[in-house]
Image 1 (cartoon, rainbow, N blue to C red):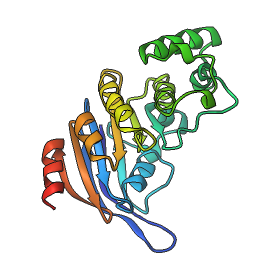
Image 2 (image 1 turned 135 degrees about the vertical axis):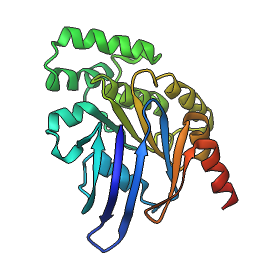
Image 3 (image 1 turned 90 degrees about the horizontal axis):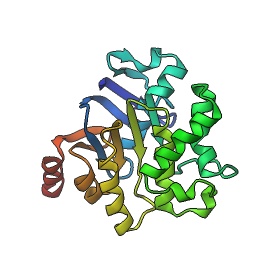
Image 4 (image 1 turned 180 degrees about the vertical axis):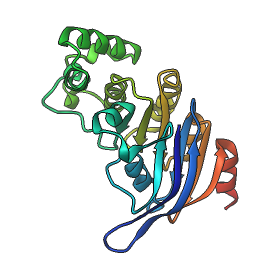
Length: 228
């Protein structure tokens, strides 16, 4: 689904965050991008989500160069949930869920609300529909943000450090929950939480200083990390 060829990115201060990276992300998997702070994993996510443009290399989505896709088609194909979640604080959970379908896909408000309620029920948080983001817990807000992204039925969802604000019990629940969503879309997850990666992902890679140190089945990658 996603194929990256010879990707490099250097920041304005001369720091090379990604160095000639080549990788293909398999479909029908939760794929974990792991690495310590400064490894380049978030920069890679920003390139795939088209928020920054690499100086070298190409990224393909189903054989299409993502930087040649029109914005609307791209944003419908790839959803992104950043660490800050970016829920609109002045909107209820239901309003957050229906904004993109109404604006981007021109779905009428009644149908969008019905779909949003179905999604919230599936996520186990239908009772939060009329709450504001400030009135829900961190784990609940994470579900809302991902549910909001799934409303556009993307081919791929990118998650940036989804467990950073969650405690151990909520992280465990979240890892089980995200696996249940594999039938909806594919996930690429940037995380420093190796235990979460082990329980949630089937494949992954470990980055260091902008390069891939190891990639493949998640257990093999984690064994490599422990040996290192």
